[in-house]
Length: 264
Image (cartoon, rainbow, N blue to C red; front, side):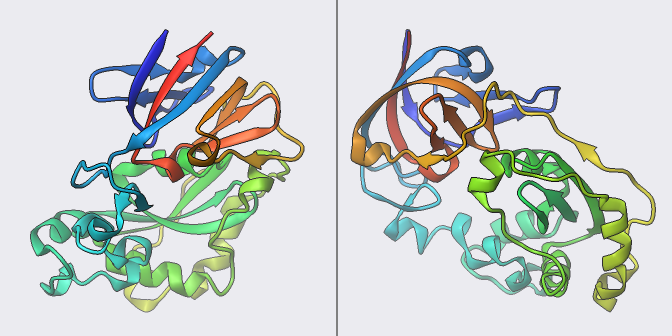
């Protein structure tokens, strides 16, 4: 069976283990069903997620021109502390930015390769943690807008990591941490503006991924360079497909690529 479509990050269902779906315009693939099977991927062309044109993808699924123009790629997305919609100040499209920024946001701790701090919209919990390959996570602050979440994250980055080591995450080279203790340890460093939004009492969320075998030395698959690849799928973690030959393919990093996928 062969499917063709433009890659976007896999949709997920929070079950044990996580259920993954690769969604195309007119079809979808239940990816868990492919584990243990040989999957062939072939790069066809580009399709910018903003304009839809066949132009090389620059970042986040957008071609270069769209990346620097669309409101969906403003600097405030990667750096929430730059959000200005709460002040009525436009970056690229104030209406869009109000919808995205002026809603409840969570500052969280997640453990994927190490304990890290991050920000997400409340309605993206636990999806954000799944996408990062975290095996455990906890909310520490819930604020009414993205700016407050951003300044809280910036303050806490002095005391805890804000990046994931993707190789360590994929090797499953991890240690369980007591995230409740981490939450209490970081409480004094939350900015005054967000202090009243601290979550006093909650528990960790634990996440199980559908993986038969973790790679010892994960190597990133560049489908644009290889053009075509075949391998036995042995697991999925975060937004990565893990193959038996230790190749790993980051769906999120390849958004905007049109591919053929066939299953033997």
